[in-house]
Image (cartoon, rainbow, N blue to C red):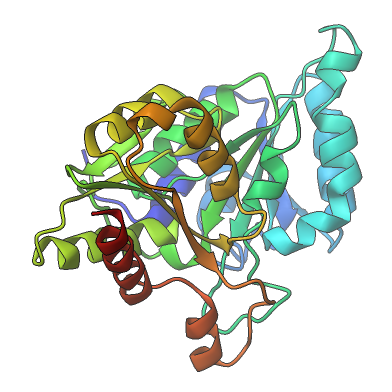
Length: 330
């Protein structure tokens, strides 16, 4: 077992699946000799060649459209969208084609496609390169949506996604790429990870904090800070948003009685709203306080660092919100 960064884990997952199946290929902008805008595909061009690495012109519509067609014909494409913001240019292919073809053909066609989307703020990348759009895709029947927060989860979930018969949206936070290891250690597993199984990163008894991607790391740091004040926070990572580990979250809520949801997407319409609605409906008897949602303000992400930090949730803001929440809940 070897230590990898988040980017290394993704690169290894793709390479291993390419080695195992010649039908797997990667397609996207600048993924070839340049190694990708974030360096994730570095060395893949040299190892796998142009027959499994398709470097394209700048057209998300063409990238995803070609990938959907190839998947329908039996290939297993891994399409990269450089910034999730640009997925808007390919929404017809993703939402009206990839997500629905298996159903509309009565199961005669499958679309074993992975679309890797680089998400979240990158530190002053401004409003058109910083959005967190995962909640939008969770509302589309036929799509599976993954959001790994650590290198080991990124590798295991991506391998499972490439092997899956259905279209998978795979979110990668750009500020996690250089992160080595993760909250539970930095050893990346070799085996694929089953979808729909959440992960407890920190045990607690007073409140459950649900988080994922970069905000998970803020939540863990906030939990450590709160522990010094006698507040025991359990930090729970769904890992996959669709399918979602309802049983795992229900067990955590039953233990703590309180639920806080933190993510980088805006509070309004973010995936936390779905979690909160489900918990209020299915875990009502175990909740001893209203659900608290923490997220970005309902504003485009500013370019200026000081404004960006004001809009987004941070360790300090999560700790402060949970601290105030616990005072009200007691």
